[in-house]
View 1 (cartoon, rainbow, N blue to C red):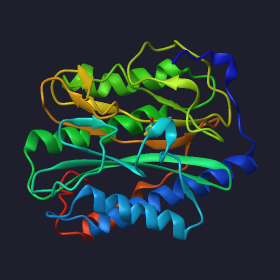
View 2 (tube, rainbow, N blue to C red):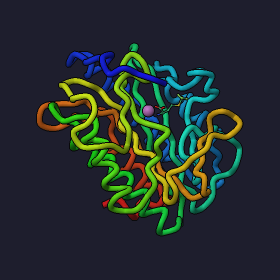
View 3 (cartoon, helix red, strand yellow):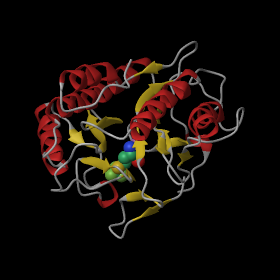
Length: 274
Ligand code: MF3
Ligand code: CO
């Protein structure tokens, strides 16, 4: 989709506070997932769990029916990059599972994602998870006023592609977030320092590195959604909702509660988390 960068909507502090509630509801839902995940479970069961949890918290799914998307979550396992359909395939030891979810709470969208490692996984896959998560925080460090979108983008690309030789997906990008799931500006995970729209206070961005172990090339399945790596190698996806501030970005979503649940779940591999 072509977007102009003169459509950026800056939020008031009160609106940012409401967006934090929406982002936190996603974090809390993903915390439930972190508690329940185990080999043998399937991603349709995770979809059910998430759908029930957000209903119980008076929110609705941002994704369900969005351009015809048929589920509450995207469940992207192993070589699925993003937008995987939940299904009945049992998860197994070594699977790398990204769960992406959006909610609308009091009119505001929260949209974020986390990648889980089931049991014993390949060291290369675990390292990819670690570096991708780190790259998200490297990007977030640049989400301060007077920097540009390209500064965030480059920080992510530098850590993943330039320093570690991973593939940064080009076809899919992060985005502004607010009363709509996708607002301007686009937030690529690759780019040039000093390029793109200048960041101003209270721009809310969904920053979402999608990083492949091998080639950056991807394709979309015939279902019109499921994006897979061309070479069949694993891909990892993390996403935070972030508000641009003067000295340090404000992260609206919260990984600490997810990580605490993950560490308490013996079925998940958290060896890479410091
Ligand atoms: N985080 C993804 C995005 O921003 C999820 C969208 S899935 C969809 O594009 F179903 F809503 F399209
Ligand atoms: Co998103």
